[in-house]
Length: 238
Image (cartoon, rainbow, N blue to C red; front, side, top):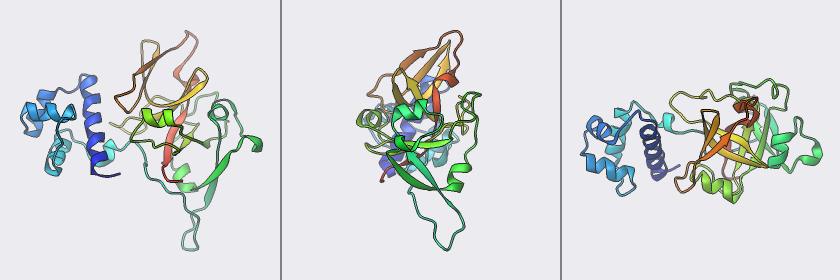
């Protein structure tokens, strides 16, 4: 994560607020003490903010860096050392189809494994659906080129996304912060931000170069029927 990534995360968060109707460009300019043209150029990627300008925009929206970071982006798996008592948990990396359909992961379905500190996993809050409450909780998938392109720069090609399959709720995991989900979409598993409106799941990519997708639900279906789990960690360098 560098300054440019942080700059882009803030820009996209502001655009989401504008899309939801809770903010306008002119209001943002007034609150942050900028000319409207300056803010408009920033929102349209025609101009960057200075470090001071970034601080002013964050303060005007009562945001901190933690609020706009949706994930632990640069997690690194480490072995337990003699100096720490935090145990290591083995997380299987599986195919998207296994992540969607297998309640328990058989050894034959494990492509590889990663080691994650147990506290980093089990400090995650759970909100399981009835169907998924007894499923194996943590597993991981490798993001392919298409998945990573839609979520660039959050997800690089080949990154490992750890899924918490005991979080199938659309309740925000953190206030004022989008939650990244693994969602069943036909035979595909998509990593997207998700909203729900008028009987449809709204699947939002991070990159504005990709379209928003609408996933209609049948009368007897709920969002939890499609939400495989929450992305709780991303390992970008494994």
